[in-house]
Length: 546
Image (cartoon, rainbow, N blue to C red):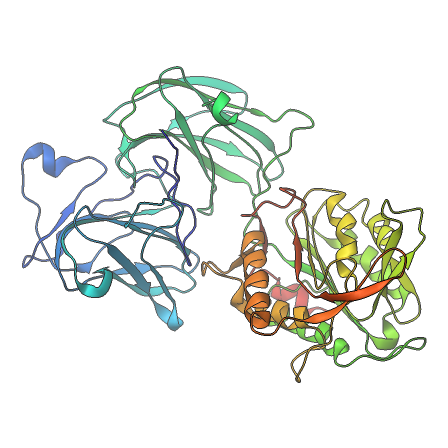
């Protein structure tokens, strides 16, 4: 059987099969149409033979399970929620192509038609962090308003995944305990069941969690205290169906393990293991929800030694302004333009920032200006080295790599300059690094038309930071989201009129070429779902004191 994980589209993150549980109880919301409200976590209504009350919509609570019947119209529900609360919701039907929409305060809106990642599904799924406190409207619809039939609307509060009437088992780091998955366990959003286990951990603990079984194909979900999740199906691909996660815990608190099965309906015994991660094991490093950006943004338009450029200094100012506007800019961040963008100032501020950063912060180095390709270099396997040209001197790619040798934090390197792709060695040297480059390492980058920016990539990156890259509306920017936004917007821009420029090889021989964006996450060095920055994460008190 081919395995599939249910994924969402825009505004939707993975909703893992047989891993998410329903929480909370429901109440009667009216009595005039074909909608059932059930106490999903216990199935009391079904067991006792009572017919639940019905309604076309009305108030519901996060964690409530609703069954209804649509007749080409829309059923609308309302829900009260707090800012920062995470909503996971699935709309399923065997009778029609579902559409699910959630709207709320301050213009919040997210919609999903067909949950992506499962080729044949017409069901809908939304996973979003709600940005404001207040009343949210949930619309149950059919595609084209043409469908009719029965549906199920299920939701959960991922920060409190354990159903109200279900007591999770306790486990300590260093223990191996036995459990048994049965059809009477807590139901999931995808039709299966799951057991819940909880352990206490501290920020920085490196922990391995595993579920092993000879009876079932386990599916492991680790719920973080803030509602985010990490998931694993098969730790060894097709050769090992057991599940395992190694994680560096982001915060102090109680962590919940969901022990389910890949396919709904599986039952049997299993072992759950929680232990310290082995030395040398690479761990997932979830964001704590407070990831700040320590930004060293450099833009040089006026040089003392080479020709001037247009608006590249403004690029750096606009990038840091976007970070500041969204509350992500750490107070130690610096903008260096023109005469201040010296090699000495660059290295001094870089050192200051790396010393001030926390383990969950992101170091962002942004540069817009001249870049150069230097041939006949023995430091590079291809015989060439690339530079970014600061105001008074060049900074080589291998020199920047050396400056970052002792930096263990996440690094985001964005360069809008000729031959920018040659700095990929900085990214590939270590894990947890990501690069966005305006051109390949043998290609010149062009100055943008108009008044918006000096470089094409600078303009797109600024819009990404202003919120464009928050593609699932959870007030955070993940590495995968930034990758997709940068590539998508670049190719929208050049689809009709490619950026024709020059390419130059290691012999300094130039031929006609084309400029293309390069996004490098070091293979899987910077995971797709890794949070790079959280909106509103900068400490206002620290900012005000500077």
